[in-house]
Image 1 (spheres, helix red, strand yellow):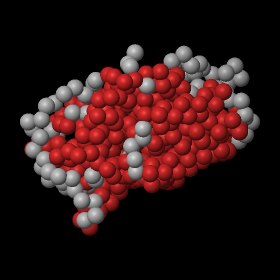
Image 2 (cartoon, one colour):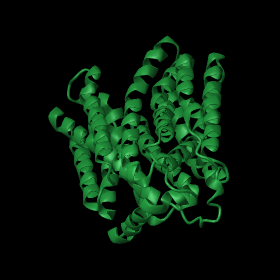
Image 3 (cartoon, rainbow, N blue to C red):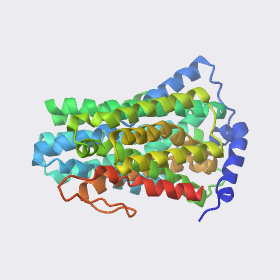
Image 4 (tube, rainbow, N blue to C red):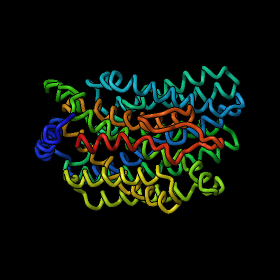
Length: 417
């Protein structure tokens, strides 16, 4: 087991150092001035790029399910496409991120976005021409293959657009926009999918391509740091925070995916699943706003409190005692999402070797996706994860309220912390 001091002391030391010179490591120059109009415009473009980047993943489950339903009569094909995207993202995160080491980050990011967009467009065209469904799964995997690396470079670009002192605020704004995307994108995909599933996939491909048009150029960032040491990206401290990110993803997905099942368990209509999803989304947005206003990196005790509260919320939701208890648990999960995700990004920024930050950020995105889709797989396949019963109840209903597979993982993070 990791010792708390050994795990985090290097991270806090690196954060102090990063405040003064981590921009020089990343770009070979001094930190940008956020008050210059050109830099504010670049940062605004980055925020829009960050918000639209996640549209394919946010809208994908519904859009792909409707697409599979129209082709095969079975919506579970959409889950197969999302699983292919996630597995490909795991495989491609580090190798593809390494390919861009000697290229300007913005240039390489745009190339990755183009690849993803073309793969999604090909998926839609294949569906329009009634191609065999395995071809759709293949191109969905191609889209996922570059997704982790693309996010890694998108996040690494932020280091070149905002000084270290304002990174918490920038990440808080990004977290708020990201949560808004994950609220609105599935709704839009559902509406467009009822008109035409193919059009829904084309729409998410178009929105996901926005970063290729808007992401700002920051110069040949990687040409100035070729002589910096590489270092390991799989150190115990980095792995700990990646595990926490995966646990958080699984915890949030347990509510988002299991909301309908929770409503059914309490005897309500499926449409009343919003009793759980709306508080989750609203508190997540509020948490992002709070981080933006506060603009500070959380201290150790604060992070411990956030982890404890999210674990408590996950436990309350899993107990399935009453609607009120479950909603309270959902609120505790949501309000801690943005503070924790922001902290993960900041601490990994300090722990990552300067030349390999994009790879570490790619792993962060991939870890979160693994947590989400581990929860999806447990929902679809009905098995036990981390000792949590993920089977159907005798009456045929899924015991979704008790299947919060993120709770044991969050407890593990607390014990390591």
